Amino acid sequence: MSAAIRQEPAVDGWFATDDSGAPHLIGAKCPQCGTYVFPPRANNCPNPACDGDQLEQVPLSRRGTVWSYTENRYAPPPPYPSPDPFEPFAVAAVQLADEGLIVLGKVVDGTLAADLEVGMEMELTTMPLFTDDDGVERITYGWRRA
Ligand SMILES: [Zn+2]
Image 1 (tube, rainbow, N blue to C red):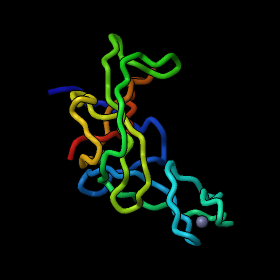
Image 2 (cartoon, rainbow, N blue to C red):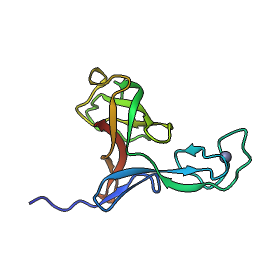
Image 3 (cartoon, protein in one colour):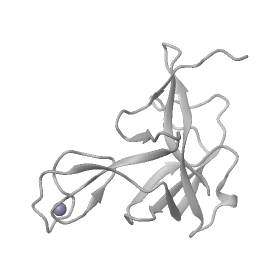
Image 4 (cartoon, rainbow, N blue to C red):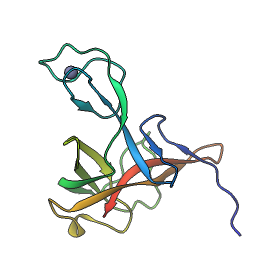
């Protein structure tokens, strides 16, 4: 039996899990013009043609399609936490199914750029990002092939 590991989001308020444990991103929506934004914020509608200044928090689609992707083959410089030795990983810009919003995220380990193509169905997941000084595993959202 493995020891229980405490997990906390690396950033609060960007994603949540529903009762079944399925993660979704949290976005903001302008009630005046319907524009979505991620990461969520409380005001300042991103639509330049709209003067809306009260955004509502909304759950975003769990699925989308690959809009673009790349592969990171170099360890990012500190303070970004990076495993040692560094393992290349893919990053995908996924267009959310309902909102049309494009959300950039890391792709799960084991899936590299050669495994991806534009238009491919992706699903939101969560993954460990790093373990902090208190031994808490910090998790972030990411994408996997649906
Ligand atoms: Zn607006």
